[in-house]
Amino acid sequence: MADITMARLHEAMVILYAVSLVFYFIDYLYKEKKAIRIAMSLLGIVWVLQTIFLGLYIFETQRFPVLTLFEGIYFYAWLLVTLSIVLRIFYRFDFVVFFINVIGFIFMTIHTFSPVQIERSPVGDALVSELLFIHVSFAILSYVAFSLSFVFAALHMVLYRMLKKKKWTKQWANLPSLGQTQQFMTISILVGISLLFVSLVLGLQWAVISLPEFSLLDMKIIGSFVLLVLYSLVLWRHRKGSLNGMNYALAHTYLFLVLLINFFLGSRLSDFHFWY
Image (cartoon, rainbow, N blue to C red):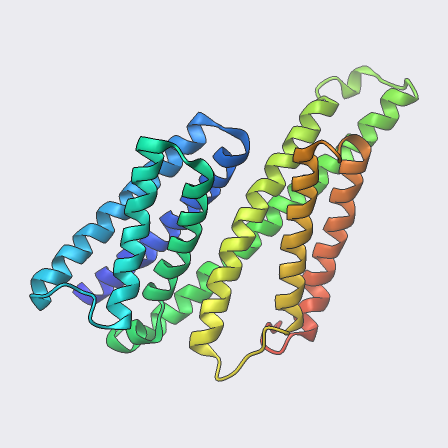
C-alpha cells in the first residue's frame, strides 16, 4: 500500500510540475502576475514533496543519495527546482528560470518512470500504463487548445469580412471584437504549445520504457515535433509583430489542417500509434 501511495505521489508531482510549466510559459511571454503566482505555488508543492521524499530516502538508507545514476537524477532534479525557486524569488531571471524548469521537468519524469523505478516497484506495470495515459491526456488537451485557436481564427476572419463589407447587424453584437479574437488565438496556442511539449516528453519516456525498439523517425513523432515547431514559429512571429490580423488567423487555420493530418494520417503511418 505504501509503495502504491509513493508511486501516486510521484505521478502527482510530475503532473503538478507540468502544469506549472504551462503557467511559467504564460508568465514569460505576457508577464501575468496570476500566472506566475500559480506557477510558483505548484512548483513550491513539488519542491516540498521532493524534499520530503529526499529526507525519507536519506533516513532509510543512512547515506546521501548520489551513489547511483537513479539517485543522482532525483537529486539533480531537486537541485534544479531549488535553484529555479531561488532565482525567481531573489533575482527574477524569468528566462533562466523557465528553461531550468524545463530541464528539471525532463529529469523528474525520467526518474519517476525510469526502468529502475519500474523494476523496483510492485506497481511497475501500472506506472507504465499511467505514463501512457498522462501522455495521451496532455496530447488531447493540446489538440483541444489548438482547436479553440482555430475557432477564434475562423471567427476573426468572419468578423473582419463583415466589418469590411459593412454588414454588421445586432445579431453579431455579442461576439468578441477583432482584438479579442486575436488575443484568444494567442492564449489558445500558448497553452497548446506548452501541453504538447509536455506530452512529447512523456511520450518519448514511455516509448523508451515500453517498446523493445522504436525510431525517432516514426511519422507520428516527426509530425508532432513539426507541429510544435510550426505553432511556436507562428507565436514567435506574432510576438515580434510580423504576423497579425488576417494573416495571423490564416496561419492558425492552415496549422489546424496540419494538426488534423498528423492526428489521422500520422497515426495510421506510425509503427506504434495504433487505432483500435
